[in-house]
Amino acid sequence: MNTHSHSPLKNWQFILLLMLAFFITTFAAAWHISQLQSRLIESTAVKNARSFSDALTEFRTLYTSEVVTTAKQHGLEITHDYATKENAIPLPATLSMLLGEKIGEHASGSKTMLYSPYPFPWRQETGGLRDQFMQQAWKFFSQNPDKPFYRFTERDGREYLRYATADVMRPACIQCHNSHPDTPKNNWKTGDLRGVLEVDFPLDQVIAQTQADQKETIAIFIAIGLLGIIGIGFVTSKLRHTSVELQQRVQERTAELVDKAAALERINQELDQYAYVVSHDLKAPLRAIANLSEWIEEDIADNLTDDTRKQMTLLRGRVARMGDLINGILQYSRIGRIDNEVESVDVNELLQEIIAGLAVPEGFVIDIAPDMPVFETARVPLSQVFANLLSNAIKYHHQPEQGHVKVNVREVDGEFYEFSVHDDGPGIAPEYHEKMFGIFQTLNARDKVESTGVGLSIVKKIVEIQGGKIILESAEGEGSTFRFSVPKTTSN
Amino acid sequence: MQDNKISILLVEDDEVDVMNIQRAFKKNHITNPVHVAGNGLEALAMLRGLDGREKLTPAPKIILLDINMPKMNGIEFLTELRTDPELRAISVFVLTTSDEEKDRVAAYDMNVAGYILKPVEPGKFMEAVKTLDVFWSLIELP
Image (tube, rainbow over all chains, first blue to last red; front, side):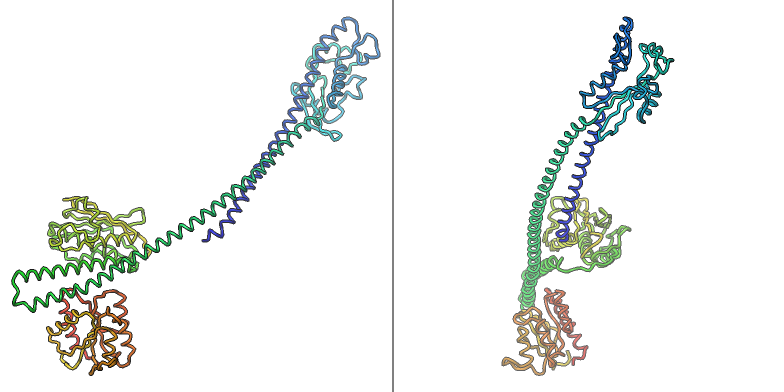
């Protein structure tokens, strides 16, 4: 009944735990997705920046090789202030910057910058390493000219990707750079780090896009979460409903079983009581028959023939047998009606006592195994079982003067002692084994060996009431072994 | 038994059992007067001289008592007997078929002098009565 008051609490704990686990999982998944998205934002931005920067570099290289070289041969001047001069075209760097600016106007405020510690005089203001990022980039590229250098930064409340690549001195540029009248440095070699090309990309658009996506994802997660909670609630209420139903059904069934068990016990008790009363009531007239027949015999002793005398003897013999049968029923009905006290029983001692009380014929040997236990059990029933089995072994032996009985014991499953009584008597054919344990069953005609057929039924009833089992192993001409088990700890 | 004046009250409802005891007494030459009551109520009436019955005088010093009887059984009779100051000293021997523990315990609780099982075989009962006679001759009854 304890489980009644505990189970709802446990249910609630379980549900709470389930919900918690569910929420944690949901939030972990949402967090993971947002992480993925921010990484996606970054990688998208970097990719965009790289292609933009690559395009600019490609354009400049192409412009240098295809336009500037030819223009020079035709006498055109290549200068940063091409707009104010005649027959002049812009320097590759100048044009590249211009292109970057033009694209930036279209593409959401991206900026292009070209800088180095060696700016041309006219770019003294804008071409140097003016901030930390630029200095870091220059330092980085002096080590790794092949890799891009980028950082995500914030400027004026907007997030930017500053993506920089190394601008390396190419063969096509080197002559011009070393010979230009305004050059800040005239010993350039091919492969020298000339400057840094930086593209600044605002992340607004990418972020806006991914944030929109994220909102959708979160919305989906919330929907899933709500559905999950509803599902858990539904399943739980269904389960509780079912468990209440089951509990009720179990209670009903248990009540039925208890009723049936009680009824069965009552019937059993009634049956035992009935057997007891009947056998008592049967005894009185039986005694009367015995007495009266004897008195008749005494009174008419002189008129009796040998035949009638024999008949009177037979009559009393049958009366005596009926008395035995009634006593058998009484004994049988008494098993289980009487509570036997549990005490420490030394089985070897018990067996010696029983054997001393039996009429063991000369030459009949009873061997008791040396490992008989001492254990807590009811003494009287165990004694009855051994006494019955041992006296049967003697009584039904075909050669009592050289009979041999062995009593052994072994432990079974750690919970039982299994005792065995083995004789080398005539044995019992397997087809009779079942019958042997029934009440009033005998194998011999009752006149041959006087027996009631109650003994083994009593033995079986005793063994089973104690929670054990009894089996017979035997075949004709091979002796018999009765094995019975007794619980090591008897609750009585 | 030497003292022929001591009378015995047999409380027994089975006619054959009454005959049995009378026969056994005869065989063992027990000549004390034996009064027979069919149940506990009848026995009490005889002991107290009620219900138009003559009071047994002298009062019996020995009662042979059956347990299973109609109207008032042996245990109920014993209970009544032991509360009566005049009758409580009577020596009671239970003669019964009931070898049930609870009957035996109840009887000894009422201070019975002996609890004898009626055997089915006639010979054994003869033995029992013989033993009783020897016992009665040995002890001093009140």
